[in-house]
Amino acid sequence: QVQLVESGGGLVQPGGSLRLSCAASGSIFSFNSMGWFRQAPGEQRELVADIRIRSGGSTNYADSVKGRFTISSDNAKNTLYLQMNSLKPEDTAVYYCNAITWGGSRFWGQGTQVTVSS
Image (tube, rainbow, N blue to C red; front, side, top):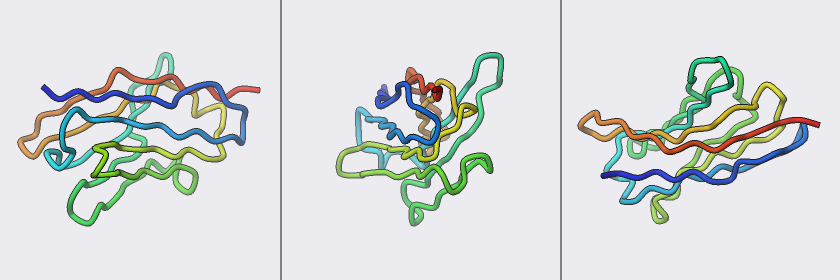
């Protein structure tokens, strides 16, 4: 069973930065893609960014985070990252790591809280 463990969330002031990490229990090469989603209170879970683990590591971002967030993976460490810069109060949410295998199975982490507030 795949396990994904997020870390790096916390409280940050507007304009600040955080880096989220997602450690996978096995090789991330078993995944077709990995990504970060977020869910604010009363809102639906939404895609923040995803990355193709192979296929040249192509990435995709939500319009709301383009130019501020960067998704990356360290295949040797089996870890996915999300570097978040210029954070805004509207970025406040629980952030979830997601992985999809080549067979189409989807796995989720437990989530990490990000709060942007002065």
